[in-house]
Length: 65
Image (tube, rainbow, N blue to C red):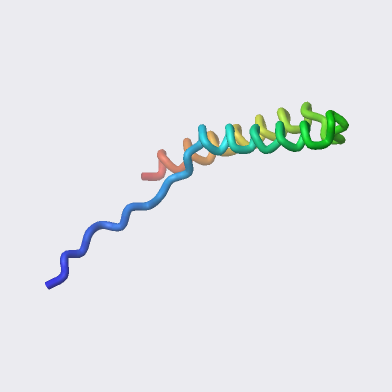
C-alpha cells in the first residue's frame, strides 16, 4: 500500500567542504590578528596526502565492481 522510494544517499560536497575549511582558517587568522601559530605548509602537505589517499581508494573501489 505504501510506495517505497529508493533511499538517496547524501554525498559530501567537496567544493563546499574546501571553501568552508578555508573560510574557517581565514576567520581564525583574522581573529588572532595575524599571530596564527599554524604553519600553512603543513596544511598544504596534509591536504595533498588526504587527496592522494582518497584518489587511491576510489580507484581501488571502482576496479572491484
